[in-house]
Amino acid sequence: MTVTSPTLVVAVKGDCDGCANFYSGSLEALEGLEVVIVTNSLKGAPELVGATHVVYEAPDLLEALGVTWPPFYVLISPAPARVTAEGIAFTPEQVAAEIAGRGNVTGP
Image (cartoon, rainbow, N blue to C red):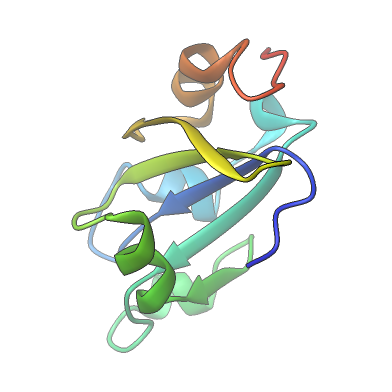
């Protein structure tokens, strides 16, 4: 994964009510960020396959970032690529408030 702008990686899973805020809800609060929604496996998670936003099956990325349990977010800042924030993801608005001012992100 090449990071050229502030990128928010959000790990989700199918049987997670809060995760639906990211894969099927409004991401307006995260405007200005590249948002990449990932899961360990799409198998057995029809709600992820039919989501409003694209959900990528990316177990290798989650492992590389050290994400072991969704819902979780990692904010990556470019040049040089580095993690500038991470935490539990409940809603896009909550994440936007937590990452405001980090990794060249202005926030909501």
